[in-house]
Amino acid sequence: MSKWKTVSLIALSMFGTLQANAACRGEWIEGPTFAAGDTVIYKTVVYTAQVTHTAYVGANWNPATTPTLWKVGGSCSGVTATPTPSTAPTLAPTPTVKPSATPTSTPTATIAPTATPRPTATPTPTPTPTPTLNPTPTPTATATTAPTPTVTPSIAPTVAPTATPAPLPSGAPSQVVLQNRFDQYAVGVYQAPQFKADWGIEPGESTGVPSGRLSIVADTANPANKVLRVRYLAGQVGGNSAMTFDAPLALPAQSMFLQYKVRFDQAFTWVKGGKLPGLGGGDTPTGCIQNGTFDGFTTRLMWRENGVGFQYYYFPGKKEECGDYAGLARRFEAGRWYTLTQQVVLNDIGQANGEFRQWIDGELVLENNAMLFRNSANVSVSAIKMDTFFGGSSSDWAPVNDQYAYFDDFIVSADSPLGMVDTRSTPPSYNHPVAGYSQWQASSVYPANSVVYRVDANGQYRYFRARGYTAKGIDPLLNSILEVYVGVYSPIRLDTAQKWIEIAKP
Image 1 (tube, one colour):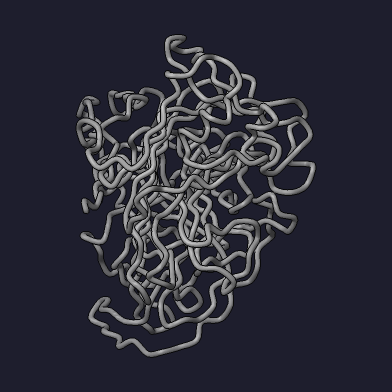
Image 2: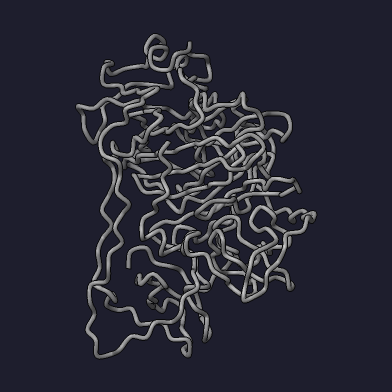
């Protein structure tokens, strides 16, 4: 089974180096991004990072209290430590939000183990590290430690190396388990026989078919193409307000890809958030369920306020009763098509070594190589969790008016479908440094809205704006927030009043 390890240079530049570049980072502090394999010293003990993550200022994810992120042992500045068993204290709870259609409070998150950053919840001591979720790279980034570059004034600006996106596989996958397009149907209400032919089950009420919430319509971007439209009822939340069902897979497997396209209507209102489909297996858990009462997983996505995207997991080692979150560092825009691709590789029994990857428009935005998807060998990748609805469970998640989203090109395959992605956009290129940005100087103070650039350890130019008065020595590589995360306080508190905002498009 092919394992997709490559991340674009842009992603690497933003979230630090991967395990191949692991290094001794000295005394542990809050703020930097630590790569899997990095070692630090904390209270005279050496720890090794189990996953790549960002130690957000104020989160207090120190090595002694976060066994899912760090393990005792390793070598740092000549100090070698031998792991000793210890019981990790429980992390202090953070305010929660409501992520699903079942009444209960919704989670915030803690960082999850991944080869790229992600987050979620309350660890409890176990012999095997419990995976949680981590924010992940995108065209902008969290800070990485890097020396201040020296720019010789006499050298004219030049075109800096442009990060080359990781190449996608070419062509369609050969090991297809399920593939649904909608061009063969007439425009109109999606009928029960059509539904059964596509998904292999009779349509229950929650599917939206009996009440006419699903329709076949012409794609406004290409009228010759027909797509599935879902109507989200005004004033309602949960599955019976739009669409939810489990689509069984004919060949359950240990590893599987899911890919589909989604477009939110031009007039779509995000409210507090809602669900999008993902893979599932075993009991396909959802709805604020306690660990120990199920075996299996779901890997749905969510849009949250203002269209900010999150991965939304249920699995046996989740931290929050109502599911764990991981940031995708993406904000969905109404009126345009996105291709969402994910891969699940199940863990070996008794080990947290499952793998999860999420791509948006062919760009890897989340990778987690320490997942515990199952406890029993009876659990396989066996379904698509076909959920899309607003909620949360309370009325403040509900839209005021009927809303619409459009879906197309569903495919489940054992090999990669990324070669079929046709929504990928080319990032802009710049002549660096961009005019109007000055090089950051440690000896300078910066008024609000000052704009500067830094060159990181990978030679990439990165651009920042001061949020307010910024004192001397506050390095934007070490104290910044992605533009997309400004004002994001739930379900994961990503805005911790960092001094600089990293600009995606200078």
